[in-house]
Amino acid sequence: MAECRVVFSPHYDLKAYGLEKLHPFDGRKYGKAWALLKETFGGELKRRHVKVDRQIRRDELARVHGGPYLESLKKPAVLAEALELPPLAKVPAPFLERVLLRPMRWATRGTVLAAEAALVSGAAVNLGGGFHHAKRDRGEGFTIFSDVAIAVELLADAGRFTRQGGPQVGVIDLDAHQSNGPKSIFAGDPRVAFLDFFNGDIYPYERFSAPAPNLDVELRSGTSTDEYLARLREALPAFLEAAGALELVIYIAGTDIYEHDPLGALKVSADGVVERDLLVADALSEAGIPWILVTAGGYTEASHRLIATAVTEMLRRWPGS
Image (cartoon, rainbow, N blue to C red; front, side, top):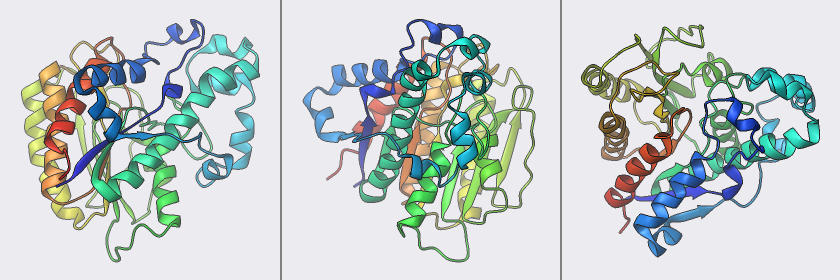
């Protein structure tokens, strides 16, 4: 039986002395979700915990992101644009490095470790990550590093994927926003297949067309719980059947589909968000596909509770043998 592991570091939380409050994203939701899991599992969580040993290194970032882009991150104006926080352009670069870039590098390393753990245990959750708007040469949408793409490339470099004649990795992105970062990075790359649910009425206003098994499901603002889950129950098995013997799935599980989220503009209930996550995890486990969950977007105080609720059930369903 698979054992679900949890990857987390206190370094994930964004603590910018109040600057983080300029954006609706809760930069401390990672630690809050971890605290709720500790309340539920106590010492058992320690056994299931994968500690993050370090930040992702520059040479590992460079596997996806070009040197000029990485150098540009020393400029506050570049970060201000990518993070959608214009006041940051006037903040000293060393401060931004410490309170914003460093946590994102820790979380990016966490996604790599989660993928490595899942290939051994069958399932893993990174309580951070899912930075799915960053491109090779540009950060945007409050994301700087493409943790998903970096994990894929580093594991491929290590020879962890061997399938020939079909996609090796699936990216299932159910965040309310389109997966424009990974799609741009892996455009035309047969190793990676995408199932992407997104609200077509909101950012980003890009479209990436790709042949099957890639599958886009474009939703409209106000999509209800019942409609959302019905479309997922239809699309998920179709995608997995078309993709075939995937060796890993990275599930981007943004909670911004929640009905009270100010940016996602969908109407999925709290129970519906959790049901979505378990529906995906169950389908992948039943298919024998190792999977990881990364938390991505979520812009309400409820985000950390929704994450913790879903992960609690995952830890119970996949306790290991």
